[in-house]
Image 1 (cartoon, rainbow, N blue to C red):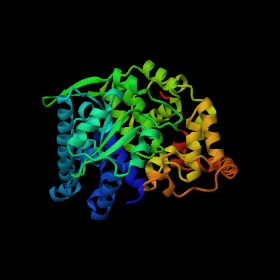
Image 2: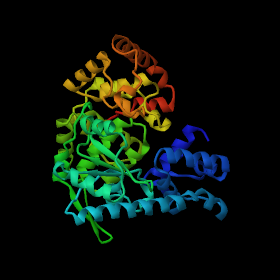
Image 3: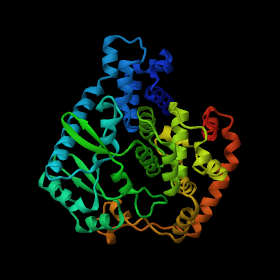
Image 4: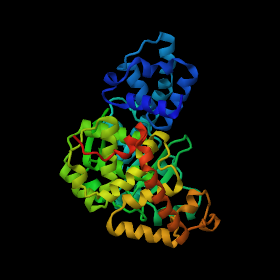
Length: 409
């Protein structure tokens, strides 16, 4: 199964109207063991395997025999077991903290599973993200350490996270991960999300005898859009999350626009919602891009970076230079100028040494080739993709990429 075929089938099964979109020709490759394995692997990388297999089992029309249908949905058993274990750990952590009068805000997958998805297996989680008020952070760390979680081994790494990042990772020997957030964006980000506003407007959700705090729907839209920039718009799961949040909750679009513009998040929100609408049929106001203040130059530049194809590949922009260009065009005003200056000066991300696996800053490998050489490469690459754009219009994929900003109906 080719990537394009896997993407189209995954996309069709990810839609809320999957039963209306699918036909037997699209599903036929799942009857072959090799194609079925490739499809499972692709949907897993995109973070939607549980979702698409649940859709196949419950809604999609198909004509497979019982043995083949069972083979297609076989991963659901393992995914369901993993979901139960993570939910049990979430409940354990929240109960431990609640006994101390601590109530952090659940973020991302942990919050979405409680508020948006019908079945936990539809939304995997890789860690437990908690947004913690500053005054409670030390007590939350203390309680989690007492519950078996471990801080990073290197004090330099701990200090690096606290000085330059927005969360601290903790690891449990049983394999669970927790990330304690005091902010939602790193210092070097070109946009900002207000963690205090997230905490102030958090909502209470009751579940299975417990209570959790989760972001309001508008903040979920903003946070998911921000996460897209970290992934360089490479994960279908983020768009599915947006689609499900918007379908499940009433959205105050005026509040979304106001906070996005205030935090410099206009272009990431606009592109996220345009992609979600184009690929998944998400209901979005027709004038949203205009209200978010995304100029025509930014729209054109981001379309040239083939955002739909980047999601299909699961890698974002096709070349490393494309990732730099995407960061530039997603920024706005003074933030864009500041980001360009950092690139020109050859400044590295403050925690680059941590991502490289070093125990201290002196153990990191320094990158070269920045500054004027990078600026020239970016300019030449921008010209090259603009010159190639007419060729893209000759293919269905190219037209979908270049037409991503078409006016919403």
